[in-house]
Amino acid sequence: MYKRILLLFLFTVVGFLAKSQSNMPLDRDFLLPYQSAFNSLNCNVFTSVMPYDAEKTAKALSHDTIAGYRDLIFKNNGPMLDLGRFTGNIFPLAGGSGGYDAYGKNETYDYFGGLHIDGRWGNKLSFSGSYIGGDIFGPAFMDSLIKQYKVVPGLGYAYGSPQTGYSYQYWDAYLSYSPNNVFNFQLGKGKQFLGDGYRSLFLSDVSTSYPFFKITANVWKIQFVSILAMMQDAETPTGLTNNFYTKYSSFQYITWNVSRRLNVSLFEAVTYDGDSGKYVRGPDPGYLNPVLFYQAYNYNIGDPDKSNLGAAFKLKVARKEQFYGQLLIDEFKLDNVIHHTEWWGNKQGVQIGFKAFDLFKVKNLSFQTEIDYVRPYTYTARDPLQDYSNFNQPLADPEGANFLESASFLTYHRKNFLIQASIVSYYYGADSAHADYGQNIFINYNEHPKDYGNFVGQGIPTYLTTACLKADFIIAPKMSLKAEIALYENFQDVNGTHYSNPYITISLRTSLGNLYNDFR
Image (cartoon, rainbow, N blue to C red; front, side, top):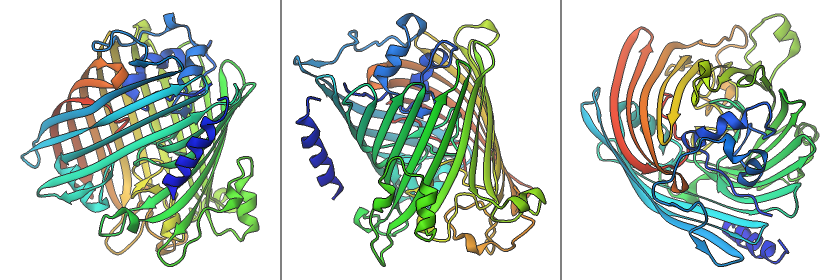
């Protein structure tokens, strides 16, 4: 059904006198040279909505402000194929990495192959598509994660076993149409990210790609984004996609550049089951209105669906420094908040962070640090098919809920070299075999053992720290090709019992976007 809709949309828009939007890669390493310029006082790019629009960001910046990577394969920055009105690119996607897991005393590997194609017809219509298939045998902590959730993080269903390794397939694509300078419409399968932080409490790129329809409108100093998406639950044991249960999510995001220094944003989302195996609800037409206040509609139909609200800010305190933050409200009762009852239904999350570019006046030296706090049972639902997830991974922070997290990064790049030291630490309360303490967002929230006295860290006290030192050499930005060597230390303390999982990887690969291995 989805393929038919995609083809119908394609043939419809081609018929228009159709300026297009091309998405920049959702990869922090390749976006790094742009970040200092994007976040300067003189730039009005809406940095909290990703993927970025390549055309609009290019207009907002002068080339001299960007210390970009030099492409060592494609000497010409133009398209590989130029047929006048149609231009495009086609190149292989391939990569391989090998490493050693000191904890499991095993060699690790990850290799894949595939193809990327993109193009533009005239000035208003563009498309892009990528497909890869691969095999992975990861370090011990990642294997246990794959075994538990049946997915290769960020890439899709895991076929195989811990003994032999896992296979995976991943693809994303989009068709973009911009009838004028205000609107852009995109239909495709991919990932989105809303926020200025390393994590997002609203919508992140942690899970695998999903079908979506996205409307973006730019008016004055305001950008409005509406996303309709179809998610899947991969709990069925066969691994066949036609057996996965479906659910739908609608997101709205309004971001306003109040001044050169201040940006504020509002967010809302609703998630509802589509096909539970027992009945088929399908997309709710009431959520197809891109300007509707979802909470009002949800209330009018009896409040059956999972909804979230949020607010965010970014404040540029100096030419190269800024603070940012998010507030996520799942549910709350004001009297319980005022009286500190720690009611289980007070489900909120808070993020606060800081970024500095050209730190200590050293060009291309950047620093970022943030803290994320999410109360127990946040993102959960009465029906597990309505929890805030896609393909057995959270749509927000990968740790789920009931945690306190800190993440810090020191990064330096010069020409095509990049070096980064990072440390990501969690303190969370893990669930026991007999009690749901609010960390696992996939469990029905009615399983909570107590109504009051719920706090972050309740359950089995667990500390998780991932430290990483990596060095990259960017070979071809056009095809996101880089070589990397990375040293990791994954340290865990579970109720006083210590685990250490050091490992090293060496890779040569085209990027598949941001992939995360710093969570449990």
